[in-house]
Image 1 (cartoon, rainbow, N blue to C red):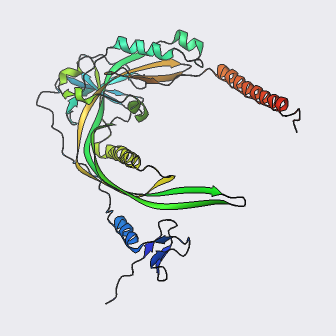
Image 2 (image 1 turned 90 degrees about the horizontal axis):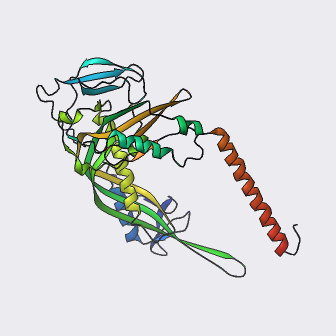
Image 3 (image 1 turned 90 degrees about the vertical axis):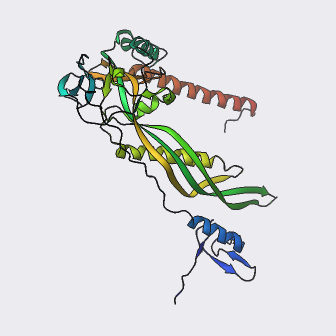
Length: 368
């Protein structure tokens, strides 16, 4: 019966490590690093324990709408970006909150999942307008005409759809670390590098990981508006939509899982890496993350969305309707930017001349 050939890899260079009988240790023939047999076997077993990652979420479907609950809800569709906005029949929605273009009534709302939670608006549109004006202050490269004449073309309170993920992450990490010691004598500089295998295991609990489920608004904008205080979320009722719009989700839970997993993995690796201290270098050699009790819920978050036009271009701004956090891009005055660049270059050149003059003054008058 043929047996399996067991090979050990050198943690330092990746070469095949063999047993050296003269020293009774494992030794790498490529980098001459030596290892105790017991330590090498433990290292190899630790790497083998890392089974394939499990990043799966419970696909329990949300509750459907109650009978008659959507009777007073309508859908508007934007002819430009194809965005679909849900609101009550009394809401006058004449422009898309995302691109500013006209929208038309599509018809009665039907289908889709019913949200589990909603964070009600805490701040009104007057607070949003004040935040917009404050956002323009102190921007030296902002065109003066924009600052003077800028006015909001459209402002809408929109409930933006999010998937909310909760889970526990069981993680095993193996880090490759080094400690470098350097010294010298009259002839040589010596460097001694010690290699370490650092193992970390543990569990992290993740609560309320938000992932924007609307493709009409950039994820960079919604993530910049975080955090939302989900502890203030309440069970969804259609009454909260009165006077506001609600974006219709078009990114499914399955599609949002990719972003949720990315956020879980990045945070887990960051937290575990932070526990490996006292080394010169540290890098992740292997990792295994498995999710437990992973579930997702559907929620609506309050966002004030404003648009303004400048030089035939639409600029979009957003404010967290709960906390007041404000984000948005602004136009730049090219002339002011060039003056700033030339001024910076001149300051750098002047500093260089000053340093040369000081060197000449205190260095005996020789510049060469």
